[in-house]
Image (cartoon, rainbow, N blue to C red; front, side, top):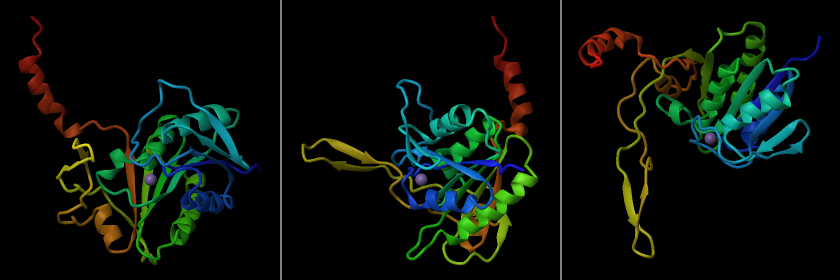
Length: 253
Ligand code: MN
């Protein structure tokens, strides 16, 4: 039997320890191809490059850099590089830093996995908590076990797994919903040497209580969190409410 193809990507850039550790780990499970941005694109979200051409460069065996976003990399990897035999799994990471709760909408790491599911590839995002002395060992070992399982027993189409790994030795794995992680709401204003204002958004750390049952609480208690995500953002609970609104505002005169 041929080894299943696995596409590895990230948003930290192709020359980072996290992606190198992930690719090396997953080569125990399948035939790994790495396609990742040529520079850091963290918080690039789900953006796609439409207004300038993309260049891809081979930077190692089965390893390419693309001068675009994580979403560009997934498209180039699946629809161009591996179009003759599509990957059976996409794994994005190992991100340097957690992607918990509200982070997932900004995250290039998670968006790459969303893009994978959109084009029909079962996908996983994996992120590592950074603390002094942390390693990627636990995340790499977990990626192997999860990849092996998902290749045998895929999730439903459109569902991806968002994994966050605490620093240190994880106590186990918890399945958890997304928590709320509001960064400090101050926009910091400073002056440049010419006296003009400039701003920092999201520069203050997250605050507030951590709810139980969430990915935030799992990682805070030193468990690996796994959260199933779906790109259908419809708020089903509000469909009826909006029908009422449509009844009021919907009359076309
Ligand atoms: Mn990143």
